Image (cartoon, rainbow over all chains, first blue to last red; front, side):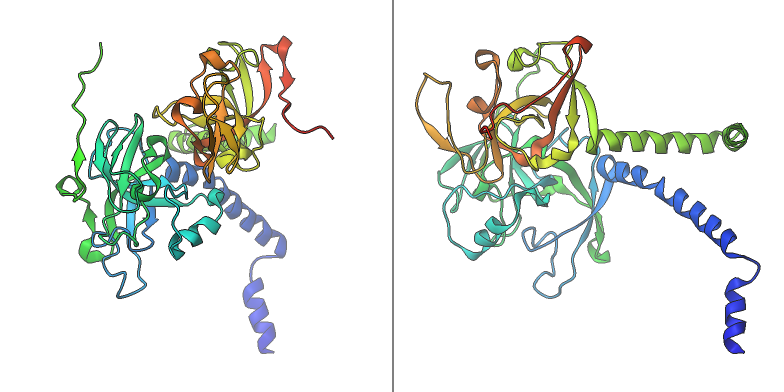
Length: 214
Length: 168
């Protein structure tokens, strides 16, 4: 008796054909939005998750206290335009190592497929034309940043906790997919990122500002 | 006819609805040209005689995005390593781990190994090409597709066949 009443509750005022038509309409109107959402995420902006301790203490401040990850807003509009020293950028990560090293960290990266489309988030330290005074994993004492490239580093002081240009050299600007402009989570650090206040410890010999050619 | 009438009733006199539908259509077309197929013009003398310096249109398969399934001899399109915003078409001459000649043949005999996640690209027209001899290996992540056919001019239409594969 009860089952019949429940069945009649679901079947009330609709036969199965009517139900199918209704759900089809909902499904189609949802599917047509998917290209628009992908377009938005690729060219306007996207919410990004910060993985790992490489940007400590600025991002993932509590990485050694909890498994919570910071959320940030990545601005995807004109990603290679107007790049400045100190900006935090997201870029397509190419897992290579300039110096042959046998740490477990780099080994695990080597086994991962390079086509996996991983995105890394690091801070721009030097722009094209600059020269950088390098540190330990880099095989040479000085590095010149070639045209169309930038030098990126994680904020973490421990060189084993960040995989950056000290290991793989300058990266092409066209690999950059967006600029990290806001922290969204946790609440206490949410807000715009004041990248212009950043003072790095890497010594950068800045290129002289060139006059635009007429 | 009744279908057309229904569409007319849905969009005519509803400018916002029409705008949203147009935007969704544009996004879908953009997605198709980014991830499926697109037609693009060639520019520059670096790939002569495979492509003329100007006015050639080629069909690009985007399923090879990120260098997936690329082999030696394929013609790929990628974002320039040195120039932000520029798109380049070149031929792949070495995959990761391969040893390639660093300079123009005859200049030196220095060989370099292509690093992991990179390819070595060279233009078909050696004296007029700026390629891996100048800017080094190209990250696979910059590869946006593979050129599979020449579509315009119509008389010269043809599939691009990889001629650098071992016979049999």
